[in-house]
Length: 550
Image (cartoon, rainbow, N blue to C red):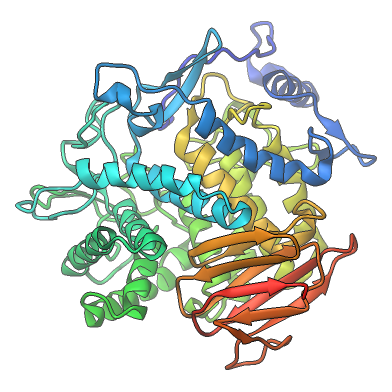
């Protein structure tokens, strides 16, 4: 059984003449998949090694084009939800998990609404794109989306889990009460890991715009989490994976996707907000559980808001991927991170590249392509983007060219999963899979910035961009020979690519030295082959950052 919903999508697929997959020779099956992919996306462009390169020209701007067009689609191409009002006053992505295309019209997928995945992922995609481009309109979009969830998707104060976020609801519902329409869950049932990620998103919105309603919501969520925490074991995690908020009934004991909860506590501790002593203890419990159980057993369960998994041996690539990306920014969490990260990348290859649904291959034209979870092995664009990000960042640390190659080919494959307007094709090898708003416009695009941080040469040449930061940035401004921004956390690293030689870098009105020494703020410059410069800024304090050529 598959856990994601299938609908009829008007994609052209090659006929296999009624033959079962087992009767088709392996080479013919692989060729048929390549034909299907191109009929559903674009004619594939290959290099001299017969390996995939981007379909757009120039290829050096392909990743930038992908990101801009995905946001173009959100801003200009998404219709409002079907009526009646007030639902019809909001874009379709407010109340539905995905879209389909019928008779050239974008229509909603009526499976469910994955609020707890969509809002955090869209926020991350937006705040990184804003820093990269200076376009603040995307932040307005995600702030409005978060506002709606805060106003229409929090549990009553009388519940056992009070003022806690709903992580899913039925398609089209304007007030969130839980995903019950498929009979998989009961009313008020949530995934705790995604609720924690909602809390993190609210706090990061507070960092960006200073609105105290987001801070207060985040602290309330954190306080509910610490009131429910327990010691993790091989059969139960620090919190249940699923719980009914009204009664407190646990419906699934084990989950492994807790980096969002850890980071929520980390922000509150650093800012001395809320019950910091309790948050410190909660972090210790999370760390002990993750290092001793999923990291050792490989049971990264789960990470999806429509999956009724009740298992401590189920595997989801999302949970493992979140942990890998977290380690690149917070390596002190795991003393063995340098050996664990390549093992975790291989874990993905063994479990979700080598396995595929319905004969879908794990490699096409040199690109590894990735499935989602044990019972849904369809190859997907956003999971493949996650894999590319992990390989790129590991290449930046290890220098192993094999990981650079893996990142390059997989990300190139992902670029084919959009049309010229940014409309996504999430699973172009599969028949009848809808295009999920969270996956295609949140999780997938935000992986590109990790890649840029690791390999700045892949950002467009001759342009100035903040490529990546773990922390939220604001007041981003670009001008000829100058860029500036304000970090919202006291310590952080920003990865920048500029077209001019940086003669002066200021932090809080003071010049920063061109070196990265322990205990001091500083920066490092690398001249790229095309004449651009990659700059890594290591800050130990807050303050406006200005990079200029004079």
